[in-house]
Image 1: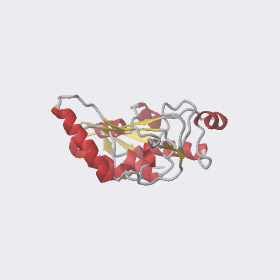
Image 2 (image 1 turned 90 degrees about the horizontal axis):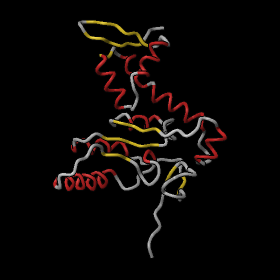
Image 3 (image 1 turned 180 degrees about the vertical axis):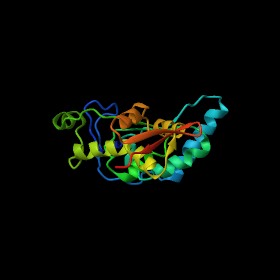
Length: 201
């Protein structure tokens, strides 16, 4: 008898291509272990390279929500020697957690899926775990977008470094333009380079 595939997720979206979520969860846990995942993926990458197959990204897109994996950060670091950009496709439901945001900042590209900002529509389409709150997720999204400000608060950053950070976070230069317009950042020139720093209140 075949064992049914278990889809562990924070949502049970009406349109999910995997079908019905079989295990709803609101807690992170280890699934297969970072070492086992890194070894298996490294072997597949080596095999693909032997065959001359091109690879552009290593992408985390699980049978469910990848940020539920407690070992996500360790797995990302374990893939670094493979010399491939790393991406995560997430439903953003765990961005309220600081440890998840920290894991995602280790990547080169993050895709955040947000279906609705209206509570009733969100619950009807995404059918989230009963203890998830949309306001909490929204705050997490904003916190993820502001990590730039927390870094600049410590020391000024060159334009190139800001661009690289935005690229890793999956954001574009409009985020900086918005912070400049709001008076949250200052742009200044020094030694032939452009720097950005947080405006002191």
